[in-house]
Amino acid sequence: PATHQQATNVAFVAICAVAGTATRHALGRLSVQAGTAPAAGVDAASLEHVAFHDLLANCVGSLVMGILAGWAPYVLPRFPNVYVGITTGLCGCTTTFSAWNAEAAETLAAGAAARAALCLVVGLAAALASLRFGFGIGAALVPARVRAAAATPAAPA
Image (cartoon, rainbow, N blue to C red):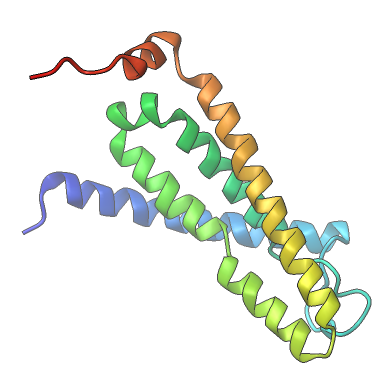
């Protein structure tokens, strides 16, 4: 049987997953409206199909994940359900690396190998940079007393 903590974690993940899916959809629409992603029906081999629809969502999700990972020494012990919900549910559903890989495969299959490789490299680099930047922000949010306690080695038993 599931414990209360497990049931609460599942509930937070489910609620945050819905928010993450809505966030991904909204960011995808924003990318299309801003002209940084192709509209539906654009041929993968066309010049318009340079950026992926989900690049912004992947970067935003990675940024939020980085913030929480950096902030984890403070947040995780105090709000474990919120931490699990946001990292697994919200960030997991905001980032769409499977759709991103499918887009790259479609572009490759359309005969645009260099464009597919470039988009994979740029997309991965942008997501990793967002994660790293977010981690720096999150780490800066950890109070000094929490950082000091985490850096102090435990006394031998």
